[in-house]
Image 1 (cartoon, rainbow, N blue to C red):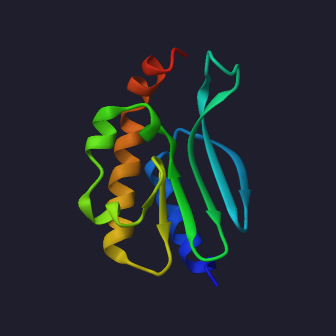
Image 2: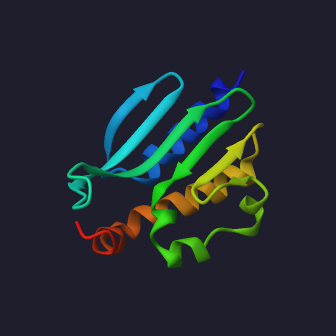
Length: 121
């Protein structure tokens, strides 16, 4: 049911964050990680994650946990789709939402050096 939405969101994340490592890429899940190791965990830091859920597609931008400037850049249009700090739920094709997620994800990728400094990698 949500395969087309997942495919669009997958393309958005991969396009916006070309320097990330694909940790998982299945028909219902995409996980991107950075190339650098997080000091706290000893593992590559999470960048983004997309998953098909029962009633929506979840789109996570993990740097939202750490970067206040990125948090401040979340457009109002995405606020109604937000669940928690990093997740945006998408239930139907919406070009405006896709454009906002593309822009926010690209900004997160450009801010990767800030993220690395913030989490002590």
